[in-house]
Image 1 (cartoon, rainbow, N blue to C red):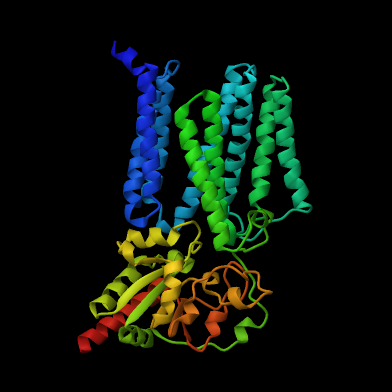
Image 2: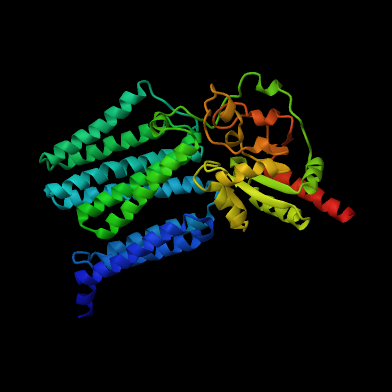
Length: 468
């Protein structure tokens, strides 16, 4: 009796609606830093409900394999999520996103084999769509992971006639899908379709440089969502349809927003060529004079300031300096200095990278300023402390029309009264160009590891307090 209740279509539909509501409320929660953790939890509860309800659908009965899959996924996923360093979060996101796309592609293949290739046309259309998009997402995400993990060079890797190769691989996948939809029941054709899509995914991401990786991750995330929605339509599973559509839509919107934040079009990013991890210094850049400072002088300037704005970048993440920065801010605030953080949307290697790092050390959400809020405030800032940020602070984006980053919205750091930049050297960022900010009269360079340099400033501040 109880089993029949759980398998009742009305019961399943009702609980799916509850899960969908939690998906939507959870997604709206992650739009703000202050509610992101709660939103993520609500969405996770929705996923658990949808999963448990799905177990009661007629035809779902191979519980042994389901338990085995759960155990394997938990054994890999939980330790990976708990042990990964925050600096490695972008590549973990890329990897986990790819796993979702790969799972969708495999499900499509399994369903095709199960039906002996004789799927109804309205089902097969969405099945092959999900297989192609899921395979592209899986292999493209693997390349993104390898670039972020430095298993592959961060620079663009291009083949001769790259555009033709991309079109050829994608065209082959679509052509083989057309063969299947025309009536072929060959599993070999299906496998070759997956392989062609895999080649397309690899070729699509290899030419893209490290600077564009935040946009690539968002775009691949949208692909995974769309493939999941396609599988949901093929299987008649509304949970997959709604969840996949939400992921696909939000990922697409995020991709567009990230591209705009870099003043880059999606086709230009897909074409590659912008930003490599080993960019070459512009000719003569090292000969331009800079004003140097040390920890003692930096501490004095910060302690005498009324308003300080911290500008974090990828260098902060690499040095894992977030705790040192939070401690420095706390010391300054104890002296009556107002400290806020200016966050550029593409600072780091993924959307929200800096927000995640600072939230990890309990920085107050209200102190994290979006670019639209931070920029007007730089005029009233006594000291802007730039830690590891490069291209997102480069004034060339405003005043050099021949610059590759011209038109990209940047943080107006150079509008502050004084600027202190903590950086290992004058080497360029991912765009491969000199940062004019480094040579401004109001800018002082503190060369060294971000974490060590911030800790030295903190020590000098504490010494000043003890003397006082």
